[in-house]
Image 1 (cartoon, one colour):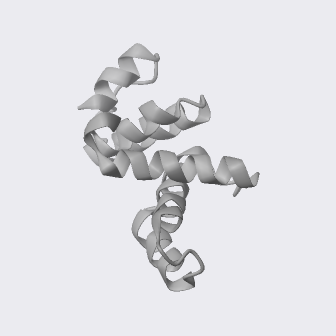
Image 2 (cartoon, rainbow, N blue to C red; image 1 turned 120 degrees about the vertical axis):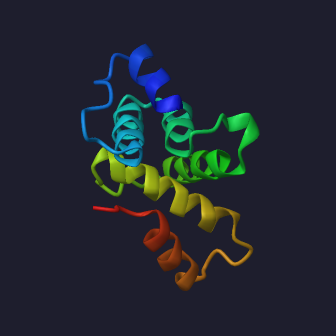
Length: 113
């Protein structure tokens, strides 16, 4: 799991006893996102390398799109991964004004707490 590899490399707490793999990946991805390590954050969240994953690229595209618009949703770091993915889906959408698409993306990739 990439979360384990990146947690060790960037000195992030290892997986806690009883912490699910999903929660661990989310926590590590959030910590990496807070360090502005966007590629590693999205690779951790998807557990795939960017060059092998359209999903990672969607998240990176969303982060880039937000940065170009000067948007900061003010979310805590784990939530920003979901914001990146949702924004990437919108950026890639042929009809960027589709509010329903934005809502669905946020529901799918937003905060799971």
